[in-house]
Image 1 (tube, rainbow, N blue to C red):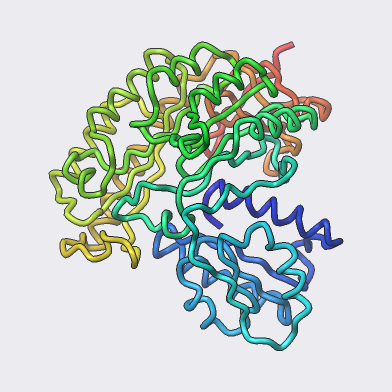
Image 2 (image 1 turned 180 degrees about the vertical axis):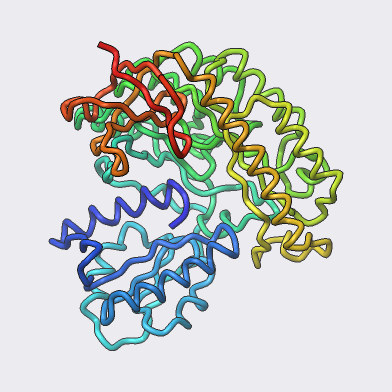
Length: 430
């Protein structure tokens, strides 16, 4: 469940279990073991984690239920109270998880084994010895974990610990190996990607890492996941603009367009800084995709603060929005704030901003018509249409007709029209 980092760590766990001779169960067969890699970024995510645990118990009667991830780290007691859970493993046990799961699978009739430790501030970065691409055409590579920011609404620093980074030589080794395995794009991801390298000895930076990657070019394309606006420097934007290696795609958490709310959230930037970052991207890379996270209904967000957010979004050349209704997360300062926003108001505000995001997305799709662009095709056809399906450097999904041998290659495509579900339809250039 949850973020790209969680998905990547689930892939790592799958590889570890295969080393013991295990294999993934198909959707239509009963599993011997069900593993839930939980999310707890919101109270709703925690609830969904509990629901999934119970759902798997119904679908796979008699299976061992193993629970790990962020919710397991934060609230192991809540999970242990769910009847039928056999093991709960915290974040510090990631490297040992495959062996622990194999052992738990054979220990029948015992009470839930709760292997959750207090997170050590000096806990090292946990990484596999070799790349783990999973089943994706564009594999994730986690190069950073943890967070030191402690935003007032966020439980993640308590669930994942302090920021820690993969050494740059390891990042390069993994990227070169992915290239040698036939992959054309990798997504660099982390919990707080913009502080990459600050914990290393000697200290490094994301910019310095990307400069080395640009020199060595281990793959055809490198994409960055979410990065804080105050950590997206002019130099980093200019580096992306100067090299066709880096995808012109940025995802910036905005959360609120009101400075008072941003300060109360403990966000280290202002609406003006966010505006400057977006406009500098568009000056250097007019065709870039710029997405944003928006958190609505934070305590104290009155109508004036909400309108500030809407006006900022309306005036900026954003491409898409990820809209999140505020969910009071126990254990965070914001959960105890007295001026909570009623849920019906949050729902109304979220609907309005989602509609605004749909307008932004549609306008960006419209601007793509008639353009020629490179598309990295996936290794599977689109199940609804049977067409080849791929992604442009600036994060647009494209469908096109073509032969199977084009799969997992980068091909030139002319965009012809807008299809269903925000997908473009194009034609392969001869």
